[in-house]
Length: 215
Image 1: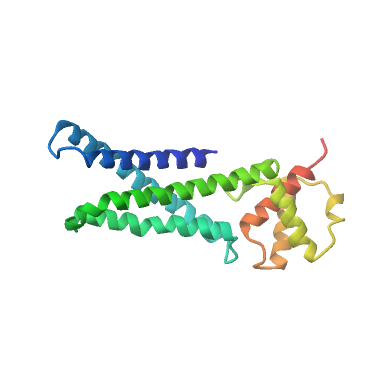
Image 2: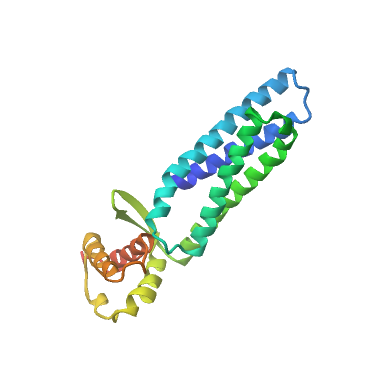
């Protein structure tokens, strides 16, 4: 939830930067209004850039933890997100060094915002699809908490775990989240590379929510 709010705020910073940039195109360079717009554009532009760097610092380790077998939606999302880096770098270089290309900045700004909008919208659509499939479950994953789809966990249990053994014995047990985590980790270790950390979290979430201890 927090990441969704931060993503929307980051996108709003980009929107304000683009709108003030467009407004500057029709203003006199030294007018009072132009100065205010320029300050606003720079402020929100730096917020946008800083937010992007923060997202990179947080998301790249998470991406690496998923191992070499990344699902197609995650690869698409990561590729679009990483595409912003060279474009942002070019934009700052034009502003600071290659000023003869200044007229191209509005187009570059619109491209940057469009890609950012697609990245955030892509994530939103993914989450809406997950919510539509069933309840979301919050579990402990290492030192952090993650929210996963129980329905996705069920599908993964059937597609991955059933390849090696029958699922009938699984449904006979009632375990805590920590106990299911140990069980899933043990199974994953036996078939290294076929199940990512993210997928294992979803399986644990489903098992803990559906086959937890009876109160």
